[in-house]
Image (cartoon, rainbow, N blue to C red; front, top):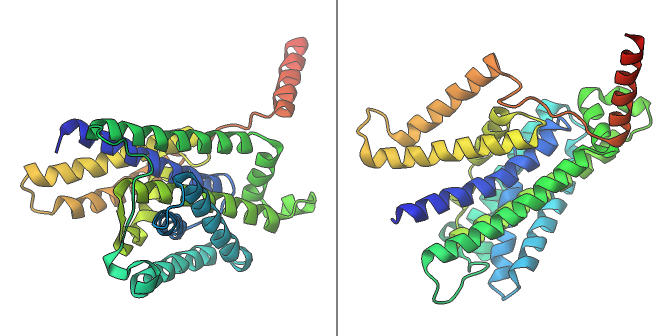
Length: 314
């Protein structure tokens, strides 16, 4: 394989999983929702995109439809699940992800079952070199990543963002102040699921083929590692985490072709992932980058007045 194409492939994967990591950060980092079924919404977006693309729907409508279907799944799961404690919520959503994967695997009439389904590229320039087409894909993926990043940044640095952080810290106190925690949680779950659906659509069109085996629970756990490593409630941190994990993942795939190890590099990768999470949780539980502060105008004004009062007092 062309080394430059391999680098382009890595860049695309960082962008796609950066979107998924941002969606989990919105749910867990800012709102405290332990979504251990993130792969379910990633799968829903991918299969929606694939099925619609086969009947000639334009790629941008396929992406939007994937986001909407994932958001609907997120709402349907969140309504009963959000009434549960955090640990039970994690189990319910994890189970939902496996049920959804087994449905698309077992029911051939939906999307080919184990044989999977082929997908056409969103944008493919006729006669262009593979490098040019790869650069086009990078542009598409990172445009979506930029939109998702700005959306999460604006949302979390607004009065709405203050509310979801308050719900994360103390649900009862937030409800005592008149905030409907169930409504906010359902909204965040829907938005996070929609973002994962967009990433799933991008993933499907980039690989041009999707199989049920691509959506194992390990995908969810890998995204969790990205968030915990980069720093929960820090959007730039989770993107750094996504980049590091994808580089590490790709490095393990290269290592098995050049190194002779007593353990298969693919299995060693998961062992090292586990060790990495243990080290991060023990020695830097806030992740590589600590939680970002809220930057609303009201808070900035309050900080300015507080510093001005201190300067006058001194």
